[in-house]
Image (cartoon, rainbow, N blue to C red; front, side, top):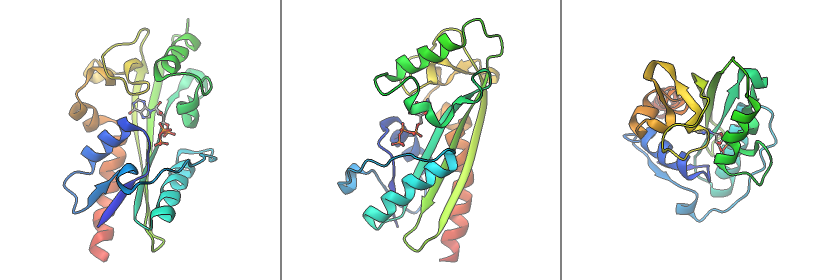
Length: 197
Ligand code: ITT
């Protein structure tokens, strides 16, 4: 079976490919199937946006598609940036600009608690939908740490590991991350479904 990853985010492509490894499936990127669509994320929840992305790509390609909608939820920011993580501070900002804005908005704030959330959704041409959510709790640092250049990784500390996501190897991060946890549940459900076919 072929499955298209419904994402344009190159960091996600790397992580999702590793997390989907070992399945009896050919995992393709949008570029692999010459797909270039702009999907508007109009939902208010990770679940809604994840479904919108997977469904759009499944409908455009006629192939099963898997999407990740994810984001950073900071307690002292009322759960923000949340579903707006990719757009925090407006369109003009880079990933670095966005995490610097989070640090700035948390200046003087002692409550540094936060979590990363990922919702993975797969849509199949026969109408079947599989969804799984994963969360990873952590703390927002006072200054960025590590060389990783994916989103908010340099400011997200996992206390038990004493490392930010940006200080971890891909394997270390995938073992505990929101995306890794969501994908572990997703793989179980997908396995059950594939047995039914
Ligand atoms: P696609 O919609 O094409 O998948 P996107 O980057 O727009 O790409 P989202 O709408 O799900 O994806 O936005 C998620 C944002 O949350 C992402 O751009 C990062 O800023 C942040 N994010 C999610 N997971 C992350 C992770 O593991 N590490 C760092 N930042 C992450």
